[in-house]
Image (cartoon, rainbow, N blue to C red; front, side):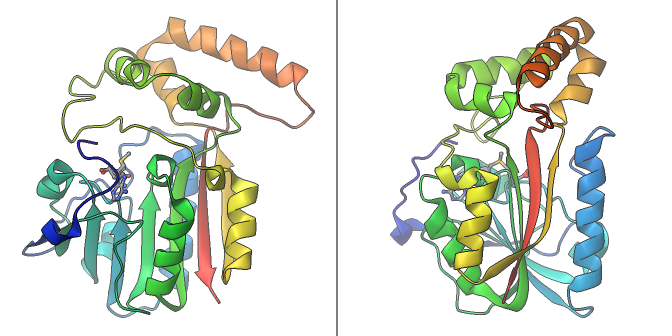
Length: 266
Ligand SMILES: C[S@@+](CC[C@H](N)C(=O)[O-])C[C@H]1O[C@@H](n2cnc3c(N)ncnc32)[C@H](O)[C@@H]1O
């Protein structure tokens, strides 16, 4: 991200965007695999459990593309808050895009049916403040969808303990994303607040009026992506993973690099 995590909200700007664009990258360019399957299951839960009329959706750290199915987006008013000016400018699907910090930006109580915070909490120093803001902005029965990297996985540990330049190198040379690391382009610096760890997130949610109604750890989409793009590198990583899984307690799979959860406000 280009900006520090603190921002002067005197300068926070709201940009009105005509209408949610169709053809949003609903499945986020995910290659076939567990992450994609889980996102489809998440779509199913949201479509079944959210009210069937017009929805108010808050995408926290929305960036420039949405993980929601077009069916849901097309009947929603979508508000995005993002701290990165370029991300806000490049956003085409929101009805309103606000330059702001999700840890401190607050909406009126019980404003939204759904809050989405996808691949964002790992970048926040105050995850607790952000989650409480999301909860307060939700209507009763409203839901928060969180997607995040699992700090207790191989990719989570590598991401947490490696320097940012390595993330940029990985995105450019292994993932083949030429613009990686340029202003407004991922990867964004990661922090990994303790609440990003799934059991802690679940306990914090339960203590703050939020029930976890969906929880799934999935193989990081980087594995199928690497196998396709860089088979030799992928074979090395797969071999390392097999050794780690063999020596770690039974049932551990360090490939599970990401998770999806849905929290529902009591
Ligand atoms: C990895 S991107 C994910 C974007 C989008 N949610 C997606 O899944 O494509 C992380 C986003 O979080 C935003 N971000 C990071 N810290 C933030 C903060 N404190 N407040 C608002 N947005 C933030 C970044 O600018 C970036 O757009």
